[in-house]
Length: 146
Image (cartoon, rainbow, N blue to C red):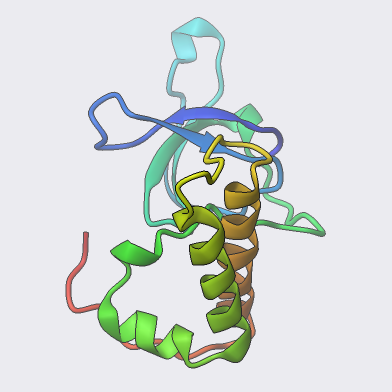
């Protein structure tokens, strides 16, 4: 991602999603010439690390991998149990999951998007999962697809 902004969640019935600068996404399809009559470039449907898809315009995405690519926040509760088990077997991921849970489950936890302790703990946890998979972590096939 070239910049932080909100994008439409494909299939989310008008739901908006927060994307961050340097977020790593996978281009699923391109709609060439979308908005051509308005002087705009093509549009892309992209898949995020959290399993959601969003629509992006050409000027919002870069095809060069940034030095410090980051994933979308990964929702642990939505992962298949076999994936949770495989990922939880790694000490670092387990420790970060415990830290995230401890930070966010407190009744006084700040959950404000941005720089709250809960949000930062979730970002560290999600990054550890993405890095593990990037290093070649083998994961079982999901029992079902969203």
